[in-house]
Length: 517
Image 1 (cartoon, rainbow, N blue to C red):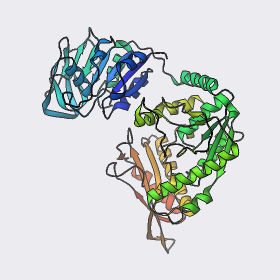
Image 2: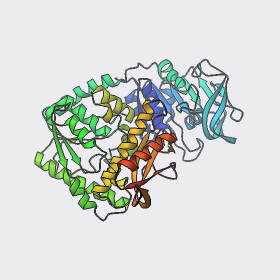
Image 3: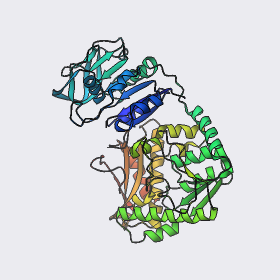
Image 4: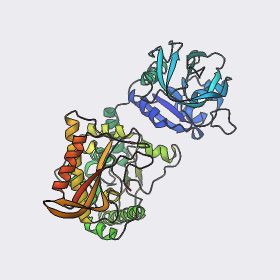
């Protein structure tokens, strides 16, 4: 990979991670740094092929506006400014920025004036995604205007001699027609990047690097069964085999058959040669959760008990050299890229036991986004049911059961969830609907009167949830075909004991959240 990369400087834009992902979709490695954590010397050390300035909420002419050292414009490196990044480029190079008489938000028709550079694949009138209240009223000397809108005189500008490019709209979002092509033109044609960021080569390189780093040392991994920790386990298994010990705690709050699936892949006779420890701790967790009703109380109990179980098992294993975690790139970004890594108490192992004698933490996925992690899992031979597994809350079914958690309630929600997933999967396979980004069944704490077989019942109500989202920051309820919901309802009521009513949750995020608690 060497220095064949794009450096993205973040000014607080809501789409910063999406820009990094789009660059990687060009098979080019990208790194995202906060504007206040990347100086000229660090940029020189990174030696990127190109630089992208992201959007941001502030005004480029504001007193405390985030900015860059002007030396960046003398490095001879191509720069693309997006939204705030475009305004910052214009302002720092001598152009004028003003508050726009009319703000532009959402889909906007952009008239293309010049196709010689970045916008060569654009339509004459290109639909783009705008989100700005300031605009460039006059571009700096040397720039040509490449696009405009009815209310924005400079929707695009370029100084091709110095290889500076700027667009007021957001090419990284799907709503912008040809947006990915614009980014691809910048990354491949203007910056001249080679397409060498591929999961196959990443896996080979990472396995070799881990092997050299760890040597004969021992590694401990808390395996949750989720995508990230499963891929770390597969990667380390390929690198060091039996030197890896995976501790899998089945706390009784997993989805139906999930414990067996994880054991089949990583346990004895599974796909990998490693030391797998499965701890059946369901009874212990149910006892600790008895009487707990508030969501935050349940989360703390589950997290604390997990640490206690993990501590006990790790003591049996003895001293280890390294502790492995499934930290991925969004975790790194959120903790402040380039600063000291922040180990989240709720992430992976739920906190680091003080007694574990390890040399350092190993985070082999810390450069990858979630979709890249899934792709790597496939390269490593993990089964699709694990690679494609949907997000699952750390406390598991503890926050998909409203009120007190019991073994019986867990059984109810596991069975109902399995039926719902089965019916969704069937409809998706038949081409009758798109698969929602996340869907599950939850158990409400409400009991209602029903009639089954001429007998009165007083049983639980199940809530079905399905959302569509691109980033899980916001989400909309998925439009599930009515007959699919009807089949799921009928099967749940008929096949799951102590359920006599089924609801579908239509709430978006906001005001709701994806999970019930």
